[in-house]
Length: 199
Image (cartoon, rainbow, N blue to C red; front, side, top):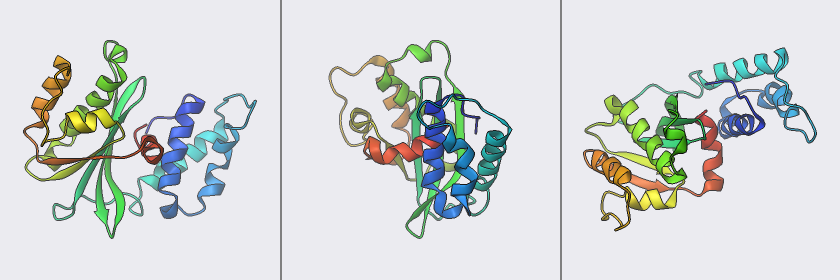
């Protein structure tokens, strides 16, 4: 995961850490230097203490307490999101009713992609996630998780396209037609912790 470069990116990262905090021992102590940067009137200055905390959290999140190996017998979910500069995805399994990540992926957006509408950038993140994890999800059912309500309808495999759908979204929907998936739309509030996964 990339080092946060702003308060917004740090909040996203800490949201993801909170989402997996039950698997990380002594998480409040580790996150303390980072949480100090979120205080009101605090200048965003990334020091050595912040870097050590960030590296430790990355190590914990990548550990076998949090990450699980891919198992073709377990249900698969794919959560995607975008930010103004990148798209990202997390592939997860449901283990004992707990969502555990298998792998993370992200890439920077091109200059042209940064000018896409919010809807198109969210759709781009879905296409990126599906393409990146094709070896895990092609030919098997997976749950596609998005916090974007219009996309959950446009990309729903059992509904038709709205009449005013853009050509780009139609291309993306045609690409997704080759996959066996169910769309699950989550509220933006619930989806916030997941956004940190996608840094």
